[in-house]
Image (cartoon, rainbow, N blue to C red; front, top):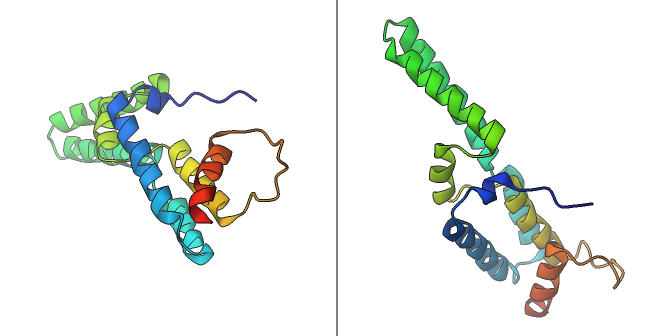
Length: 153
């Protein structure tokens, strides 16, 4: 199976992607000394973390509704706000990018794939994949497990 493209990462500045990746590696290194119970708690926290898509799915309609509300109250520029927000959401759906995305990424909001990579690396640290045969395909998760395995022992 070929890897799916991550359009958000493709449209994010390389330095921002690198910073987010470095922060994840730092967390994994720090978390490599945690007990299985603490690793499970960390995985649960990742399950609740909002990804970039969820932020956009909440912020765009909220701002559009504010614009509609302002328009109903007689502030015609509020309808302009709704139009701009909805056009940006459409742009993101079609192209995988919109201006608010850059702001959210710089603030550290991650993609679902980035969150999942950390989640699976933590599961590997916890030993969830220890039964895999030695000839199992090597992917980013198993490479992280191999790299951090020596730290944990």
